[in-house]
Amino acid sequence: MAKAKATVHGAVSIVSAIASKKGATLGISLKVEAIVETTEGKGIIIQSENKSLSSRLINKTIEKIVSKKDLEKNKITITLTSEIPTGYGLKSSSAISSVVALACAKIFKPKLTDKQILLAGVDASIETKVSITGAYDDACSCYYGGFNVTDNGKRNRIQFEKIPSNLSAVIFIPKNRKRGNLKRLKILSPIFNNAWELANKKRYWEAMTINGLATSSILNSDPKIIVDLIDKGALGASVSGNGPSIAAIVKKENIPNVKKIFSNLEGSIIVSKINNKKAEVHEL
Image 1 (cartoon, one colour):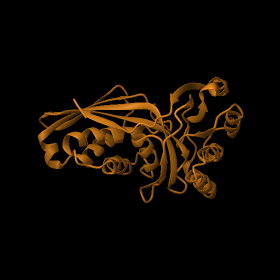
Image 2 (cartoon, one colour):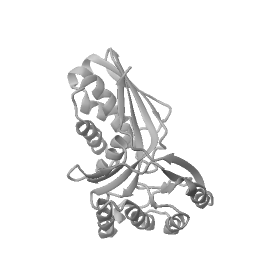
Image 3 (tube, rainbow, N blue to C red):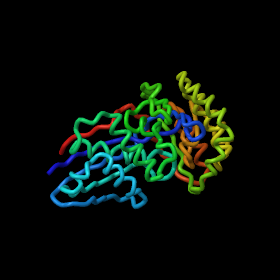
Image 4 (cartoon, rainbow, N blue to C red):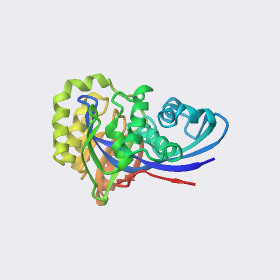
């Protein structure tokens, strides 16, 4: 009988991959932890305080890692704790699929590479329709930390580096969870492509702000907020993922000014340091 604990962090968008299958993201320190325990028997038990977690995603991720033979012989109990709000574009599903894959691999498939573990979660996300693209860009920043620029179609990480450690993400979680029509993002495909090219040249903040202006004009947010955030010292600001959360990346001294912009809106604010730490796992 075995027990393993894994930790994976969240991320925010720099460039949305929905329009062109090419994305860029950066890691933040909000985390998800999974403890996987095997005992004799059969079946998968998921324990979590968060009732909106997709058990389909978790089950599918486990099936990607654990062989049918092992599933027949082991009762697998997964206990999840998450600091990432679900359904706001902060990559909770990428973090959850990665953390489950990592903890299960430690017990059942210790020889798997990082990329194989990552892709188990990406494939599970596509197959359970949790994500349109499988969110390879999101998964990379959740798993590796830092800045990640990816081609989701080819599943390649094209650029990656550490983020300056003195930065924080100020994240606004609106009360209204309404998301706009994602299909309309394709109207601005050339704009997202240009933003991605900037990210690929390591001009992350310009890329993020262009992405923010483009996505907010389509997805029920006010583009003016993005402009106000930059005016108050944010390096870059954008709707994260498909929204509705908005993230601004700031140096410490500008956190109060940026929070002030958000405090005029209905919702809550989370301040999270950036994250450069790779996912971790160990046996208990």
